[in-house]
Structure formats: structure tokens, C-alpha cells
Image (cartoon, rainbow, N blue to C red):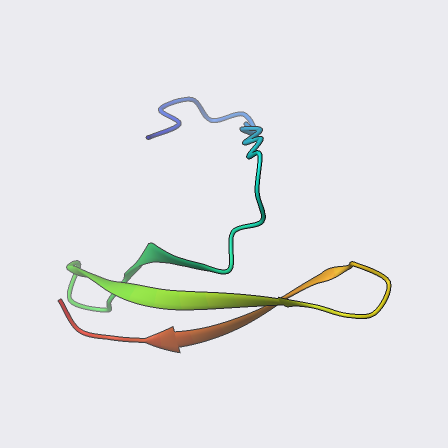
Length: 57
């Protein structure tokens, strides 16, 4: 997914169950991309928190 406009854009994702792990692509200084595995955990109030660990792909 790409925003080819110069204005701000947002997407909304709705899931039926909680997502605990996902991957996102992050740009590297040489112009390539690498994946960052992200894990979510939820506190006692149900608020999600994010912890990211980068991996090479």
C-alpha cells in the first residue's frame, strides 16, 4: 500500500481477534527494506503496547 499524494493519509484495520505478532517493512539507508517483527502485548486495562525486533530478509 502506498500513499502517492503529498497529503496525510490513514488506513483503518479491524480484526475479529487480537493480533499478537506481525511484520512491517522498514527502509534501510541503502534504499532497500528489511522486515521488523513486531509483537504486541496488552496491559491489565487492555491497552496494546508494541515491541519491535528487526530481522533481515
